[in-house]
Length: 331
Image (cartoon, rainbow, N blue to C red; front, side, top):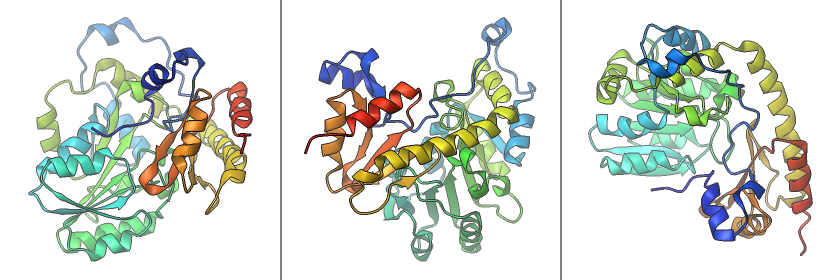
């Protein structure tokens, strides 16, 4: 099983630093999450029902009614590879580790290609191509037109394009979710999540956007009540809160630029790579800085094979000051 960010209890046990004394910058989750209100008692007492308005709210938000609510996008990440006969799948790497693990577990051969080179993936004979946009952890962003052109090219040879847009809520201009499963792009499949931008990872709520027959198959495999009633209720409220969404995007843009400025003096090979929710450093020895910060109770996310160290956003001003002090490390 791949290791992920957010393994705070494990870090606390290994270091002896109390859990409450840690600053967790390892996940890329919005530290100022959408404010969940008190939930009505019936949300806890009744089974979820599909006519509660969630699908309509999500369709308005994503610009696409061809969607399926999921118990987190992880459910689709695991199930999708099992719907296709074993073959080659081209992934733009490095990427969220669960994707290649799921495809390999289903018997596919994973081809890892540079994160920004969608053209190289298309030049392979792989019937399936997978990318994360914006990419996690490189922060590389593929333009919307580039992704749609790739989807059209793959469809002409009966291929599929899978796009994980877990971080696209803060960069809606790059999203292709509105076109997933459309007549023009029938083999384009998009995954969305409420975990990152909305900061609601604990709800385990996400969506799959794509063609109706694929959605139908996934739904049958998930079975009834796949998404809990509280998760459906919270997701519907969050997706409909445009005022919060607009303010969050503006705030995240400011804070990611601030974080990049703090990290810039540490950059060795190229400037920090920025998304609205995390900043990634290219380093010769990323684990050295990771370990130095961990000794001070600050958890980041290393990608040693790729030479990357990813930083999520601090939440409170005290957290920003703590990170700034910690980065003044001795030689």
